[in-house]
Length: 118
Image 1 (cartoon, rainbow, N blue to C red):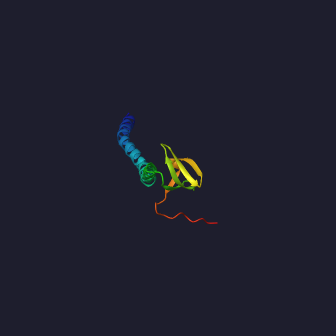
Image 2: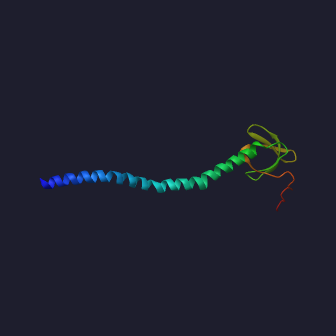
Image 3: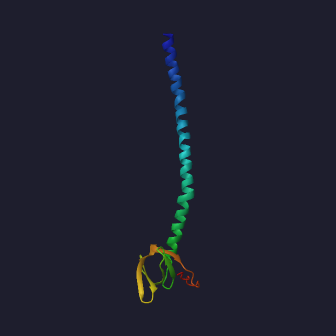
């Protein structure tokens, strides 16, 4: 009888003491995951969003006469701007239509044309 009373008191004491310890250990187990997510966000997601926002602003400000390089490497001059497309002159009497998102670089107005390497 004394022994069974001892076990019941020990179980109650360990149950009460074990619960806060389990919650604390769960929190400490989550801290590394939270830190990894924060680092991932700061090093990868945030800079990518800034880059994407800058590119969208650049594309929205395109106007006829701007010289561009597409993301596929085609050099051209913008002849017309529509809502989602551009009309680009890439050679004499050769015009193509491309999406605005395909613009890679806007060349400076006074910059010389890149030299051809053969």
